Image 1 (cartoon, one colour):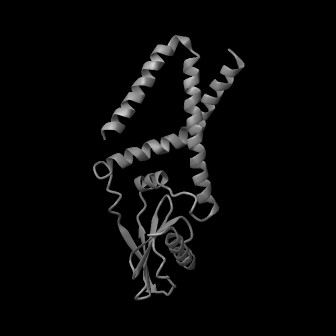
Image 2 (cartoon, rainbow, N blue to C red; image 1 turned 90 degrees about the vertical axis):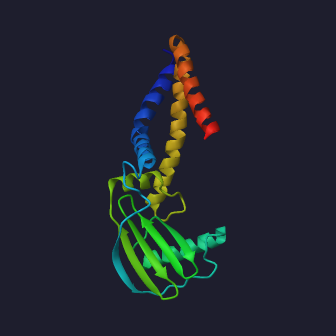
Length: 206
């Protein structure tokens, strides 16, 4: 066996082991997404438990809206300030369904906390969603990227990027390994063609 083949096989082997937990997570979460509402409870109908409802005042500029990039960034800055005031810093997304209300959902893998700020009435209501294993798996799949605060949330985003690159290298090393094994080239070509054909057929028809 040549040095190149040895390095390629070792690369393929160890990348497969490194990728195992990440591929497993995405596989399980994709399965849950495909069957939510039938086998798993609908994730878009969460049960929210009240935490608090109190008077609160925070400045929200009129142009803090998500229709423009500048407005979106301003909206996130306002939401981050409200979360900090309430010791709830972390990954979040913010919505302003109407001019008088701001909604902030602060997420961890195991639960979600929602803050509803009434700009007109200057009240803040806090609610928490019950934790569930399927919700945790889904949040792993849909975790937001680098615009989230805190080092660990950015670390997760970087690791996802690294996983994507690693998967490409893993696939490439597998193709190289198949091509250099003359005895299995025909069966490998059939497998490769079958996978490509099924993918292209579904992309074209769906």
